[in-house]
Each structure stands twice: as C-alpha cells, then as structure tokens.
Image (cartoon, rainbow over all chains, first blue to last red; front, top):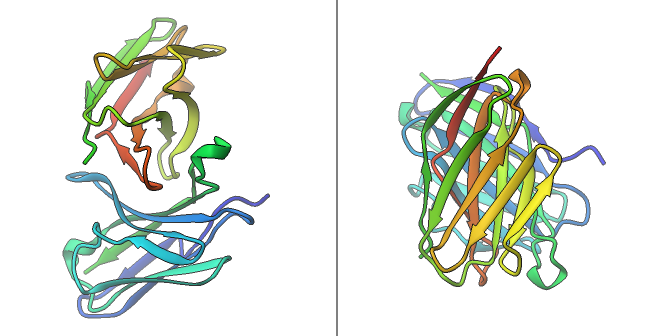
Length: 117
Length: 112
C-alpha cells in the first residue's frame, strides 16, 4: 500500500488567498483525521471523519477552516482566507479505528508545510 | 476530556545509553496508548503501542510500560543509536469516539 498521500507537500501563499490541502487515505480505512502541527501548540486534531461523515470538528480553529470528504478515498482541508498564523504543517492520518477489532493505529501522511506570507 | 502530559521535552543521551520518556493521562477510560516517532520532515510513525489489558510490551530495543492505577505510561529505548534521534510523541485513545490525544513531544538526541 502506498500509505496516506498528501498534496501538495509545500505551499506558499499570500495572506487572504484560499488554500486547499488534499489527502488520500489508505484504502479500506474508515477514519480520516486532519492535524495541525506548530512549535507552539504541538500536534492538534482539527477534525475527523468516520465513513466520510464529520464526527468531531471541535478542533477547527475558525470558520475560515473547512473540511470535506466527498468519498472514501479523498478529503480536503480548505482555509479561506488564509492568514500568517495559519502557517504550520498539516497532517492527514487514517485508521480502521474500530476498537472492537483492535485496529486503532493511525497512519500519518508526510504532511503539507503551509507558509502564509 | 482526555489530557496527556509528556516529559521531558528534550532528552540528550550518549550512544549506547538508555532513554526513558514518560506520559500521564487524565481519563481513566482511555484504553490504547501508542507511541509515535517523527523524523525531520516526515509525519509521525507508530513505533509501539500498548492496550490497557497489559502492563508491558517489548519490541527489540523498545519497550512500553503502563500503570493504569497511576495513569501513566513510559517509553524505554535501550542501547540507543544515532538513528533513534527524533521527536517522540505519546498518545492516549479514549474508549469512546475515534480520537487520539497527543502529548507535547520529546526531542531525543543521541550523541555518537
């Protein structure tokens, strides 16, 4: 399996622009997670989906952030408009995530490094 | 909700020495505790995990211990090597929902 795939790997944009980050989870995984990593705040969960349905978006910082999962193999995280404080590394992860099957391991993608100037 | 505290934030050891990283959690219902290693420029990768029905698990030079009563768990790396240098994250999985709560990370440096 190719693992979790994220694109782009690096994104540099100007304040006010729309940014779209993309993720392809591991095939067959029911859960998809979006994380943000910064030096100050560490690894933060933004939102996660189960079977394409958003379950918990309490970590989404503001209305400027939105996430979608139109099908089992694709998700996007959008920031509109972007601000310099959004600069971070954004990770996507996926898992089978069902405790009763004992398969909770989350597999992370390589991340997208976002810089907002 | 769950809260995970991790210590130390940085750890420097000589090659061949052991390294220990400790985490505490707040939710007694948590039942799954993975450890992730993150190398520079990469995403976190699972290195070992432990479930609440066992107290210790080993995988070659890596071991994890869990004390459910005290609500803490630890990562032990023996015979450290320079390639062990990375940031290590502990996490706790709440029994309900599909959510992992991560510690703040420990930057391990192994000096040759």
